Image 1 (cartoon, rainbow, N blue to C red):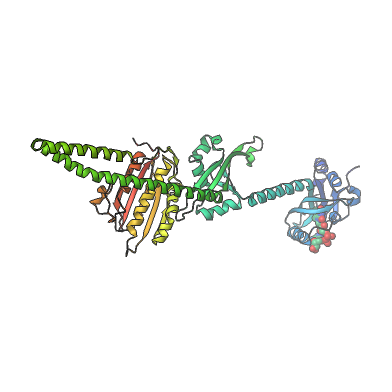
Image 2 (tube, helix red, strand yellow):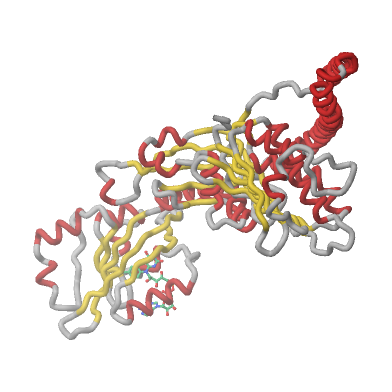
Length: 507
Ligand code: FAD
């Protein structure tokens, strides 16, 4: 059927009569209509009939409103006409009815056509059925909303990082970590701990950044309680959304990080461990005190023997008989002393393991809490947020720091001493970890700083203190290849600085 003749109000007739132009409009795969100023249809192309279901001869002369299914809000039409009346083009979405009553979503664009007098003479309408596209759009949005809800409701922190490490997506749980861990980008803190070189690796060897269920510990300054996470990371390639990638799809590297908070579980385990550790340390202390008592006794027994030794050498010429008797007595005594020495209990060898000193220090704080409370001591715990492991003997290291903390408590728990603060901190340099135990006690006199490490030297005037704590501490540190140093604190009190090499090698 030939296209209907379009009668226009303006001198643009000649243009429209152009055969080529007519054919282009006629055959375009877009519903095109031309109306008068009241939206009465003067021309409609073949695609218009296809999309709307209205035969062209029936729509010519009808108003475009025949397409309305009367569910588009009035404000949309008001907005449309306001725009068109001002001589401005309009585009938007309307719900239309086909001839058979079925509805579709039309994406419509209306352009005013101006006559020679500069006034709007006609309107050019172009529309297409976008119901399927809209359905897909909704489907994508729904999927996205569903995925976001699932991600948000998940009891784990989830974040997607781009190749430069920027967080491009994170869920509620990950956002909560910002507040809880006091870190601007908590996912970075978790990754730094789980895989220290992750940022460089992501650029050089991304596959190495994929790992599952790696235990991560985050210590928070000022808080005695660390947080534990089970962290997993997966390298994902996301299709580039840039137009350059339309014909040659390119992928952008991303890192998906998932972290489950395992603090509650770990605390439960730790409570059980602390109880076991308390028993172990108590046993260690009991054995140590027997060892110290016996060593002290032997040390003191050696003194009269030395006197006897001198007496024998004096008497050997003048009174050989007495000297011989004394010699015999000395021989017997030496044998008894040796027998006593054999009774000194020794610890079995402890295996060298990977030890996190923050964990050791926290155990010591936990075990010492009753003493802190009993003596009114305020504790300031300043752990390094991330601390590399040292290779060492876990029990020995706990004995070491417990002895240092006990010394600090003893120093401050003096009648009438009011300032009672203990500061425990950890930090690390390239190849060693440093721990400082500082107290606000009376401090240690300069002449005692080196002597304090000698066995049986004590600044405490009590028969209970044999003065072997620091010498034992020094021995443990030496066995780990570290060093210990006593300093006078600037504000008063004593500061003990311990350096332990990461490799735990005593050489
Ligand atoms: P109407 O009584 O037509 O009008 C609704 C609102 O628009 C009222 O506020 C009214 O004041 C205002 N209005 C109506 N006509 C004019 C005018 N000439 N000047 C200023 N304000 C006016 N509608 C569709 O639903 N689907 C389509 O696909 C569609 N295509 C169109 C294509 C073209 C080229 C043009 C010009 C209009 C088209 N329209 C279309 C709009 C249509 O003409 C109606 O305005 C609309 O369908 C609302 O119809 P109605 O009978 O519900 O209300």
